[in-house]
Image (cartoon, rainbow, N blue to C red; front, side):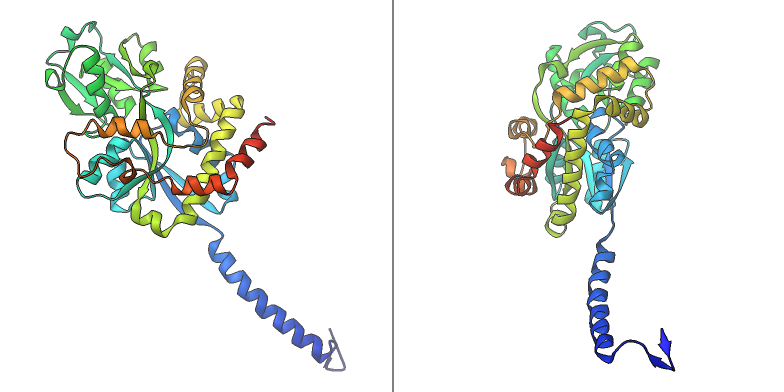
Length: 339
């Protein structure tokens, strides 16, 4: 406002406003730059071990922590781990077997959290196969060599009195692709988890070995990053883990909403299969996403030759340790105790 061509504000006020404007400008620029961080996380396939991430996204927890998270189906854990090592994604939902294998070949991957600390596979045989003899010499499908579906096949075959060289192992990609190959007779056996395992039962296929029922300690599905990315982006990863942990708590606390999200993301419409898949998640998901060292050791033992058998060379729990020290776990437990 001006009167007679003169500024209505006293000169001292103008000086104070100028100082305030400069100060605010200094705050606005870094805040604007830090408002949203794009973050790409790969998943092996749309299975129930991803539920914590889907719930974090559906609940707005990533956005609330300044993250624009893109969840990408990599159609195989090992393939996704390779994309992670190449730097094309920021994190990967994959078991520790892929971490160990890639690090053996010169990678620098680290597991920073776990979405499942037990094996969740059931080994199914195709139409007409009922015994181990029916599988001998036949093709057994895995998602990719070095994946959890590959390493756990060794255990499933052992339960049947067989070894890996009693069958022909071939890569077939994700669980749905393997299920279709099994139903058509293209392969004779494969290990799959929920909700694909329920679809296999609905199709009348024979569950020959239920490894999930054995609850074998195993870093089956974990959140993996490059060690170099962890060193340079701890704040981003801390925010990602906080949101993912809250997504996990929400999934465990709100069954109705969790099932809705699970059905939408897996594209499974049968409520019975969604019930089974959700119950499987609820029974086996670690609330705070803390990795099992015993599960890691069991995987390491599957590799006859390694540069290191030290669990700490494959798992970095330092961000989770920091969250525990700052009271985040206590805070989130208190928040969801009301549900």
